[in-house]
Image (cartoon, rainbow over all chains, first blue to last red; front, side, top):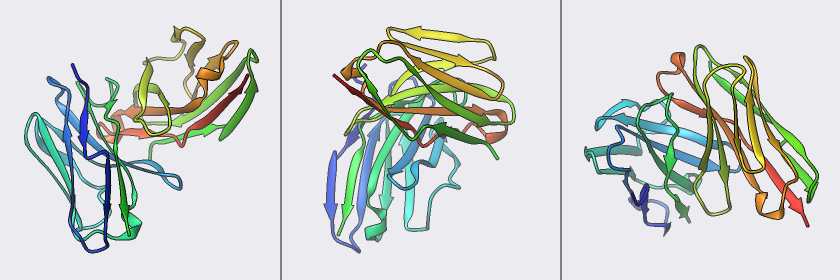
Length: 114
Length: 111
């Protein structure tokens, strides 16, 4: 398996623009997670899905953030409008079962909002 | 609320100098404790899962152990290629299937 695939690897945008991050999880994994990593706050869970259904979005910082999983092989995280404080590395991860099985991470999208 | 605390924040060792990284956790009903390695510009790479106190796992120069309150990652005779950030994470019954991460330990091995 190719592992978790994220795109783009890098995204530079101006404040106020819409940003869409994409993720393809490992085939057969029922759980998909979106994390954000910064030096100050480390890895923060934003939202996770089970069988394409959002289970917990309490980590989503504001209404500007939204996530979807239209099918088992694709998820998006959208920020609209983007702000400089959204600059971070965004990771997608998938697993067989939450809590018991390890997460498998993609290589992340480094977002810079100017 | 589930919590994970890692120490030290950073550790510099000479090649061959063994040491341990600590992960203290508070969780209501441990499902699993996970260790990851993260290299710059990459996502965390899974190393070990531990499920119950007393359990140990080994891989090359790394050995992970677990008690009811903490986990240790022992590094024996490290090499420069072991330099990375090591992350600890827990999954608990009370955290609704979330995996909570510690802030990590930055390990640097000097040749």
